[in-house]
Image 1 (tube, rainbow, N blue to C red):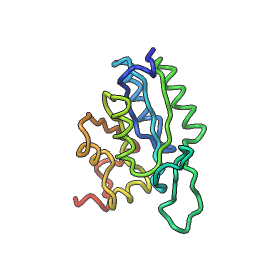
Image 2: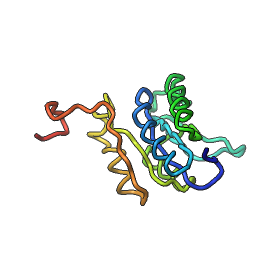
Image 3: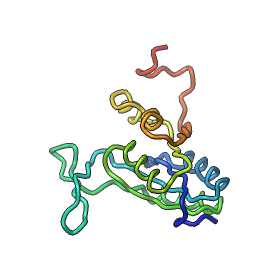
Length: 168
């Protein structure tokens, strides 16, 4: 079993409701490398603006009309799926929640944990629309850090479906 204190990890970006496929692949890789899995969910609707004197984070919403300053965590079923997959593969797992840009958050954690790779899923649902405006997290990761990035298909649409981003 992997030890969370040793260098090396498989860092994965997870979205609520789309955890299972990405975690299955990440757990297989972590088992092969004998390292833990670090699951990271990022609330991109919030920004970290620094620290208070007591060390707590100053978090503000991107939407000026929002009063919600609490990051969205993974749901209980998603957390249960992560724990079940980790147990089946005998890998240690940590689950972290961050705010801000997902690429920066995943890259920072990968640096801190000396990750062997970063695993992310493809965008699904409304995330595909956001990808049109913001760009793919996977594509941005490959351009902004030196680690390997493994992209796991989640809810693939096939070649007969044409999305607004697909010119064919």
